[in-house]
Figure (tube, rainbow, N blue to C red):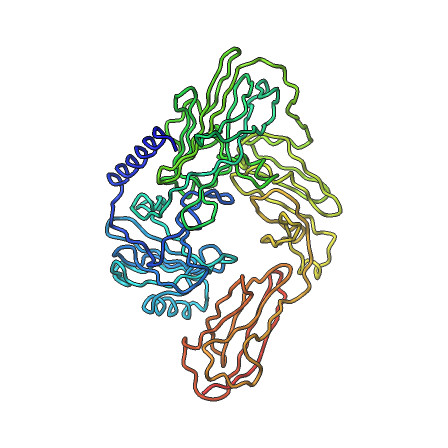
Length: 564
């Protein structure tokens, strides 16, 4: 790193620290764990349809580490769900901020007792509670939970957030919760974008990947390009922190043209309501086709994200014939480490030899209007502003399978997909559901609303859909003991449960006719009961568990066991 670059980096780091100390309290929040602070996810990382709202703290691929209250306060919300955050805890603090702790294995004894009381009252594992300010008070550093991996198919870690009084998440690093990081972000791909029908980059009117090389100074230098008209740029980049190989998100992205800053976005804060606009920050079409996220250094007219700072002309560059330009794109992490990519441009009014394909179909989407189309018993209805921009949609139905464009166009709202079911008998309808297909071609259940002549679902995903029939009940079997076995020394009962098509909808367990709290783990396909919930009298006990899938197929397991 050159002396000039070192000075610039130091200045940026000092500025960020001074800014954060002035705007956000320092030393108020402590680290929520007492193990080495390593991250698998950073704030505002690009995720599917949203920004990551906190820090993912690595837990050495293990569960059960102590989780501490980051500051004094009270438990203001508890949410337990099979997916999403799994077991989550929210603490409201006297200074108006709220901290969030998610994917927990279990809670501290006093919190656990409070939760189970309500779970048994409601007879539900999934629950959401809002304790009052005096019910579950906490001191700074008090043990509140133990780390886990609840919430679907996630590995062991602690998800940690800091939210302001309006529930907006803020980068916890601004509060002094930081990690060691002396590695600059990596820039992997550079894309150039002609932004209207008359612009070109290297005679191309479609997005073009631009090669670049690394100079001895560490700066990246792109191949010189010729261009004309209105263009923009975007990069794929990630950051690595000390002690971890995870490809984390960058903190800020800047673009300068001939030394003048024209674009900046910073991972400081955002609102959950705007998070889905991430699909306008990235090149969504490329993401849909190649699963690569290109962060664009220009702002779509429909993009209202609040992460942008001092953007000029939306980051659009006007390239004039005979002029030369030097564009610099700078990716930074929170510590001020940076990578710079320099792009030399010469303005040249070349003819377009690679034109954009303007495909026209029978299904024209006008984004600001209601759009409805029907073909071969399938209807798709898009409310106003479902899409951000106008386009021609591909829509076809073949052998009962509807293909609704490609997953290359972002949606802002859900649309309705309806299938005509008049050709099915009443018995057949009972087992039918609407299924979508994932990227690997596997069907997935879509919540299906049933009317006499039609079934419909609402979704935010384009792609393939069909009607499928599920005539098979969920599987349900004992895992850690056998019928009539003495299990006096067992801490838990474990059962295996799964459904291979429409998916598990609900379950219920009883011992001796009384409801029991069964914890469902989608990742392990298990239902678990902890004997510490209730002391059983010595002798023989009956266990009954019922599992129901999403079309109503039911399986009941009945067995007995003995316990002293």
